[in-house]
Length: 171
Image (cartoon, rainbow, N blue to C red; front, side, top):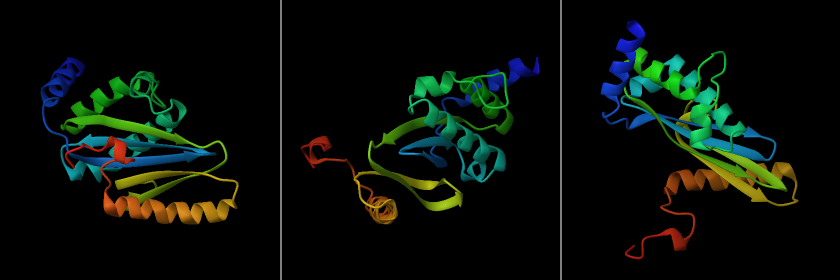
């Protein structure tokens, strides 16, 4: 009965706006994944359980090439449920709408992927996250240094697109 009531509660909250939350980044070898998990309030984003949830989603995204459908259908760590069912349980427990909004993956064949988190609330979790991939045979330490600087500029300037071709011609 409680489970059914929780599912009903979660479906009622699905229409509510979730514009807060966290960005999470995970790096591994020459790849990186970045995810956005939204909640209705920033209070939820400060919750340790929510932060752990976002961190776990980042790991799953890294293993599934940031494909949202694959992420949602993947087994959630330490549980017999998939990510979608775990997300529904979190909505019922926390009492707010929570959504996995988007995920992206970046890989390089030779070089480095650098993650930068602005306004971190915890390691690799925060409000603004950037991934930069540098294809180069240069020294890894140099790549990490310049990649971090580039990522900081990206976070500051909030670009609308990666290239001019992606911009609305009206702009």
